Image 1 (cartoon, helix red, strand yellow):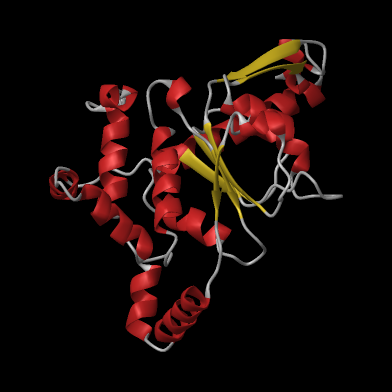
Image 2 (cartoon, helix red, strand yellow):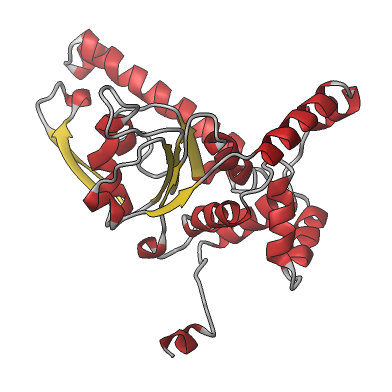
Length: 275
């Protein structure tokens, strides 16, 4: 084949490997696109039409993260903003707290309600991965970013996060697929980023791009978490239920909304805020 195409065997192998990886990636994405039953969808929409919807959402999140009511709901609404059709309305959030305060747990509790193909939770990454492989992910959640410590976690991602959260990323780079003989442009829209940090200091530019929330532990929260852990591991039925947890009504409804690709925000009383 290489002779017929008049190209080196090594180049052909590289192209075949690239196409295989792309095919695998596409297949994995297809598996994430779950088709829910009509009954599941109708039941979810029925709950979404209730006047106490935000209360129902808070109760769902509280199953996996106790306390921090305001921060939970802010994190949830920030995550939902990533699904909006208008990229300029996608919000981002920094969650600040000491080690072991529950930052990761809060973020993961919220992500249980977000459509699976629309987000990616990472603990580390490179600028190239964010610009190329994750450029179409509308919600990027990073476990920890510490900018003001020597060898701080993911501090090298600061600039690409700034771009991602305000206007989007446009990166020009050499194309490895063409043996660096050509350049390519990688572009993405403005997207939502949520991350945890132990930093007390702040970056001035980042302050204009992300909202901020603080998480703190308390004796009451620690006691509840410990007791909940004891209950879970002493009851095989709870363990089985936790391992087979199905998508809740929030994720199902948001997934169906997202398929419509026309999600936006209307706040009828916004004009009253002028007063």
